[in-house]
Amino acid sequence: MPSGKVHEAINMTFFAGLSLGYIYARAQGISIQAERVLNPQTISLFSLSYLVGTFLVTPDLDLAEQNVRAKSHWGGLGFLWIPYGAIFNHRGTSHSWFVGPLTRLIYMLMIGVTITSILGFVLPFMGYELNIQTQLSSNWRQLLLGALFGYYLSQWLHLVADGIWPDHGVKRRSKRKKRRRRSKHK
Ligand SMILES: [Zn+2]
Image (cartoon, rainbow, N blue to C red; front, side, top):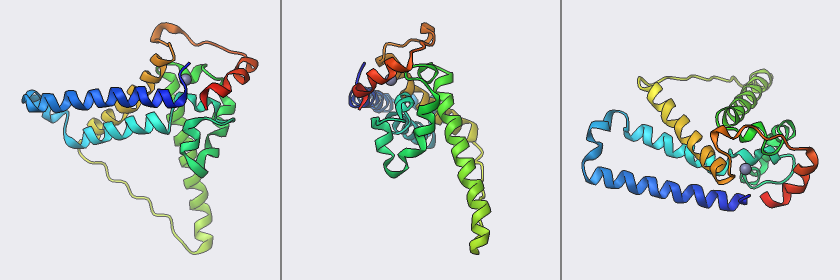
């Protein structure tokens, strides 16, 4: 299986190809009809999510109870992924096409809600107030789709590089195999 570094290189090569294709299409005036869908905001969010999915939130976080490259990119916050690594077997559900990436989104949402709740509880005691205001822009559906597609695409490339296709089915591996594989993903 490719190492974390190789996965990143594959994803970035694909990204460079996409960018060149986009620049070429623009130069040819092809994207004019698509302007409503491919507006600069959506493209920025797509790119951002793709990069996050390439470097920070990868399927190999299922090894986060050990040391894995994506976890190290989180620096001091890497420990937040340890429970995820403990829950998911390496190359199990975490490496499936639709549910796998979703498990990481839900996991991050749960961590976010937990931290926000703790802050909302603790801060008033310290004399602060937690004030979260969100404003949805009118094209939020489009932006959300762009962000999701960027993230999912980065995860799918990882899976393809791992040799896992949509009809592959989830492989269940024993913990012993998992331990044997860990060194390859550092
Ligand atoms: Zn993998």
